Structures are given as structure tokens and as C-alpha cells.
Image (cartoon, rainbow, N blue to C red):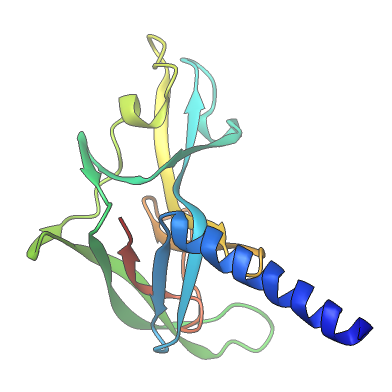
Amino acid sequence: MRSSVLALLLSLACSTANVRAQEEAGVVVTFADGSSLPLTSWSLSYEYQASRAGAAPALAAPSRRESRDLLVGKKVLATAGGALEIQYREYQRMSGGEDPQSEKVAFATGLVFTTAGKKSHVSIEAPHKDLLVPAGVEKGMTVHARALDLTGLTLTGTKRSFCLLAYMPQVECNPPAADRVARIEFQR
């Protein structure tokens, strides 16, 4: 009797979690290796550095701007109901260390954003500083976009973060195929 009550409670808890996940607009992430993962409580996370005039930009602490929109230059592209494909180019490079070896690396080279059945090729352009700094940019302040990540929760509640692309060469975004995002489908 006790095990059937526990099974019923567990079933109710799981179905409640699934209903909540379906109610909240989520994303389905497809990776370069063909696997996929649904995420809830997601955001596109833009990492940037802001420094005052005269200060060394490299010493500025990184900050983040969370958004559900795709920020490209001065444009804000609403993602709801759309899909984003990330195009990569693979290169061979020598790894560092005592025993250098050739390794294959992939870097994002372009984006294809599909909404309402229409595909648009989008260049990888850093968001404008006014879009990155929500409080506004002070006069003389320098803002540099660093990287774009996708963050969210799996259906089991595990927080995940995936590097999508780097805006500057000092930031490396070269995940393995199992973590390299190839496509994101944004739910309504």
C-alpha cells in the first residue's frame, strides 16, 4: 500500500513538472553531434566589459546582459517562434603543451535566423553598446562585447550554459561537438 502511494505521489510530481515546463516557453537545442536537449528558463547571455575613459579595458570585470532577443548591431530580433542556426568552419591547429598535437577546432562564422518561414542570413556582429548596458553608457565609457552564451534549465532542473560564439579573438568559444550548438528552436 505504502509503495503504491509513493508511486502515485512521484507520478504526480513528475507530471506537474512536465506541465510547468510545457507552460513556460522553452527552447530545443540541437548539437553538432545530432543530439538535442530542451531547456526552460532560458536566456541569451551577452558577456561584455565596460571601462571608463583612461582605464585599461583588459582590467574591467566582465558583466552580462540577459535577453530573450537576438541582439545584432543596433537590431533587436524577437526569437519567439523562430529558429537560429549557427554555421561553423572547422580548422586544424596545433595544441600547446609539451607534446603539441594537431586538433580540429570549429568557430562560428555565421547565423541563419528563421522566423515565419523566412530565412535570413545574419552576420556575427557585436551588439551595440546601448543594447548591452541597460542603465545606459556614460560619456567616455568603452564597451566591448565578448561572447554570446545560451543558458537555461534542463527538465530535471540542472542549469546548463553553452558558448555560442565569441565576438573577439581573445575569447575562445570552441566546444566539443557534444556541446557545440548547431540549432536553437525558440518556442512561442
